[in-house]
Length: 458
Picture 1 (tube, rainbow, N blue to C red):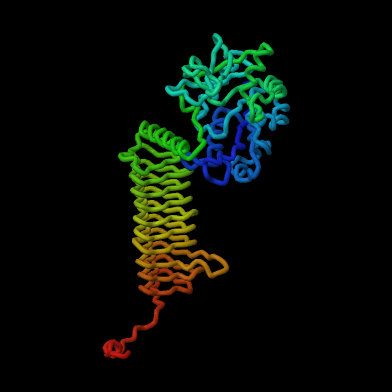
Picture 2: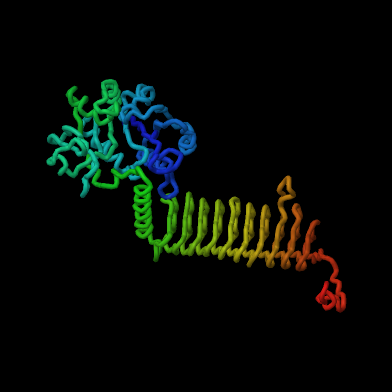
């Protein structure tokens, strides 16, 4: 396959967004716009990508894969000027095909990138504009065709009535032959009062040189969509959200009511799973068959087995095996592995721990930095004191251990298989197998003391 690369324009400040960072860092379904575009290019097989960034671009760089080529546009002097900042990158790839795309166009999907490139090669074009036909073209540059080629791109403000009636518009993305792009960039001149260099002017330059310029209709009006303000960004989120729902419906996932449901497109949800209102699923999360998530739950970068039930709880960076039940109002923090059939009830927090199959913690418990065996029972109010103010320590709990209500385990400590702790016990030393540990003051009863305490003046 011929070599291909991409230049992504990501130097915009996005002042109308109201934030302090770059516009391309605004998120659509939890992913920055620039990562949508970058990943779409990678999905189309484009591995060499140069991102044009602006000043104070550290946050943008953190969102890009390590080793990504970048070029700095210190002054924003138009799209042509932005691409010129990648001149060194392009010179090394003069014989390649180059995709130039906006960094805020999340719906330039891999299939569209590939289709446009195939048309670019088949037409032997110097430049191929990606276009779309829309019901309302107002505000967009119109594609004026000349037979199979493109005669011009006319911006809205420069179009006459006949040209404004054209519904084929410029999507803001183009394929170029690398050498032709470099030639055109050298000849760009400002043709506007802003003194900016527009990449679309490359079309006229190449035509004057007798080079062929074509347009490829993407057949999907979403390809033109970007975000210049928060309202448009909300629109992108709504479209992306519906796209995910449509895919999941086709795969047999049950989302009976979509109110408050947001699902990252990277999430994998098996057929038969049910997603209830108010649920948010982020990152590289996988949900097994017949699991029920929600209402009002949050899953992030976690893997859930089959038949799990998560109610009004947070699961972060953890793995749950089959038939795990969690909630309501509990949190599993990163680094946990929860065994099959585990039940975690209300107001329980688990952190960086392993829980064996069949273990139960019904309510009001903290399990931190622990290796817990199978069939363990945590009574109400059990707390593992894993932090001494300087270091964190692990606790080991064997199979079949029974922890009475309000037991405190002062880590590091180990409880053998079958050990019991009495309610209110504080464990500071290891407990052998099958032993009963009672670590609390002996009860003292003072007759009539309560009555005396209630007397006036006390």
